[in-house]
Length: 427
Image: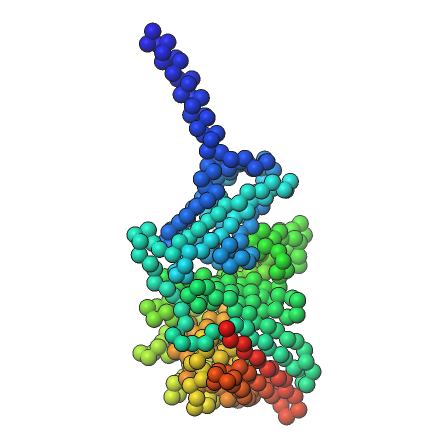
């Protein structure tokens, strides 16, 4: 009798177990999510991973949208893969620490070739597991005026060539999370910034169609590919990264003062730069040392300061001739009034620009103390003594005393020059 009862209970247990598993599943056409609870997930500020398991009966692709900022693409959340064929998958989700001071949300969308789809809602709250709030990195100085956009008009030899608009997006802590450069209707490049407790990561997309999803965009055959749609890097190896074709990734490590001490960049063909930064006792930048993948473009930047202003930058190239640039400044303290460094917004001296390979972080003030005054002139000189560019800078101010216009004349000789005019709009 006991054997009969056991025989009856065992199948019943299997049925109940199967029924319970079926209740956890949720089907969307050719897509089945193993655990429907994974469709809505909430993580603490210091949680950095999550998963979603599903079965696809068709090929599929994934895209990510920042639901907080209602825009496509973001740098604080990534997936271990963005497409696949029919089969079962556990998609790994990686998040950076949330130091924004506010909850943030993302939507992961899985779509089959046949159009079936489901969304995964991810919320990362502003507090850690233990209930504490992580320190906020990258907030502007108290009272600093926030730049909303900059319009740059460029003339070459008296002929207007281009107008570029630079737009800045901020989070609830007034930190810049996105910078977009557009020329007319064309998006030239876009930077997405994400803040950790002791680092900042930046994703740069350039030469892309802004209407397409950064991560789900397919890679077609292009110059440098093998002709069947597989990217190849500059050394002939097949590129394997899932990101957009034209992309660079940066990681900036910060010291306790919030200044960059080391950094690295890697672009779409796996080309890598590493650099380290040293400061003096007053947090003025002294030196930047760059190394490149094949040690071909290694160089050292030496910085000299006078009365709180960066007056000379020397570039010592290990494989090329060296150069230096010098600058003079006014006696104002107007450069300290905006949340970005206006000198590095408008500077035309190449050596000053070589301090930072990203093109934005020195402008955002992460390379130590900024110059107190505003540049009125700069000059670029080769090691031989040949001067290959002289720049003059003039400024206008609005009724609040903030710089709202910069005019830069870049003269190459007596007869030839180009001109840049910057219009600065504040929030």
